[in-house]
Length: 523
Image (cartoon, rainbow, N blue to C red; front, side, top):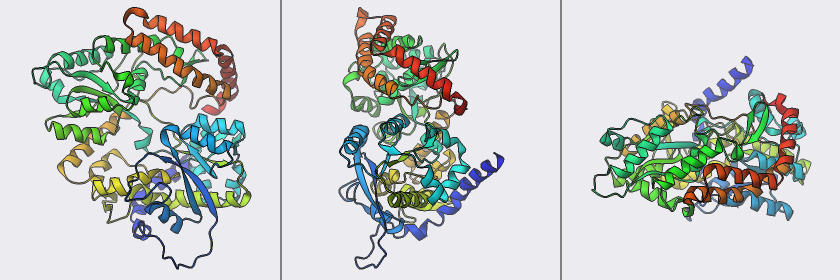
C-alpha cells in the first residue's frame, strides 16, 4: 500500500514537471496537419461527448474544432466524436444503442447508468483488453486501487476511469453576503436556526439600503435542493444504512424535516415564490447578481455569478459558507466519488477496435489530457513556478474550456493555492481566485455522508427510483407551497405510500440482499 501511495504521489508531483513539456505538443494544438501529410492510416474509433452548448461558431462544433483536430494529429487513433445533449445524455445514448448506432466508447458520470448498460448487455467486460494491450492505464489502475470497486460489476471490469481532482470531487457550494452580515450585525450562521434568522433579516431589514422590501434571504439553482436536503443527511437518490439495513433517503424519517425546512422558507417568503417554475435558475441568478439575495445555494465555483454581482455592486463581498448544523449534526456538502468519468466499450466492438481504444486511452492518461485541460502554452497559459497561469480568461473560455471532457482520462488535480497563480492578474480575477480557493477549502472541509460507495447494481431499484421521482416531486411541491393542505409528516406518509405502491417493499428486499452479498468489497 505504501508503494502504491508513493506511485500516486510521484504521478501528482510529476504534473508540474510535465506541464513544462506541454510546449512540445501544445505549439501545434490549434493547427491541423498539412493536407499532403503522408501518414500510415491509423485505426478509427468513435467516442461520445457531452454537448453543453459551449462551442462557439468561431471554434466549430463538438464534432470538429481545434481540439478534435489536435487529437487526431497526435493520438494513436483517429477519433470520431458523437455529441449527446448533456441534459438528455442517457436518453440519447439509449436511442443510439437501440438503433445499433452507439459509439465504440460510451461514457457517463453516472455509475448506475453504466451498471444498467452492463445488465442489458449493451457494453462488454474489458479485463482482457486492459491486460493484453494496456501499459499506462494498467499501471495507473495499480497505483489507484480505490477505483477498482467502482469499475467492477458482477466481478468483471466494465469501465475505466481516472481519479477526480479535488476541484471535481467538490461539487456543491453555499455563498453568503458577508457585507450584509456586517451591516446587520449578524454573525456567520453555524446552525439551521441561525441560517433561518439570517435569511429573515436579509428579507426584512433592508440590507441593500434602498428603503424597499425587495430582497430575498435565499436563492438557489438545481443544486440547492440537494444542499437543503444534505443538511439533514438525506439525498433523493441515495441509500443509507440504519442498523445494518438500507433505507432510501427520500422516505427516511428525517425527510419530514427537509420538507418542514423548505416549507418554512416558502411560507415566510424567504425564497422566491416562483422557484418551482424557475427551471434554469435564471430568476435566482438575477436576484443574486443584482444584489437582491443574501445567500446562494449552488456550486463551489461560480465565476459568472460572482463577477456579475461585483459589476452591479462593487462593494458586495460574497464568501463561502460552511454547511450549518441541524439536529442530526453537520454533514458535508455533496462530494463526488473518486472516479471521474466511466468509459465503457460498446458490446459490438471487435478485437482490433478494442486494441485501438485501449491505446488511445493509454495516450490520454499519459499526456493527451494536458492541452485539453490547459490549452496551448504561451497562448492560453504560461508557467509560473510550475503552475499554469491563464493569460486571457476570455480567450481561454472561448478556445479551451469546452475541451475539458475530451480528456476522458486525466491526471489534472489543481490545489486551492494554485488558483491565484492560475488566474489572470487583473484585480477582479485575483479577487475571485482567492474566493474560489476559500470556497473549495470550505466545500471539502466536512465529509459528505455516503454510507455505501455506490447505489445497488439492480435494474429494479433504478426503475423504481425513476418512476417514483416525478410523483415525489408533486407531493413535495404540495407540501411546500400548499399552505395548510398537507403537513410535512403527511407528505412523508404520502411518499411512503407511493413508494410502496410502486413496489418498494420488494425493491428494499432485493437491495438488502445485494448489500449483504457485496458489503465486504465496499470497504
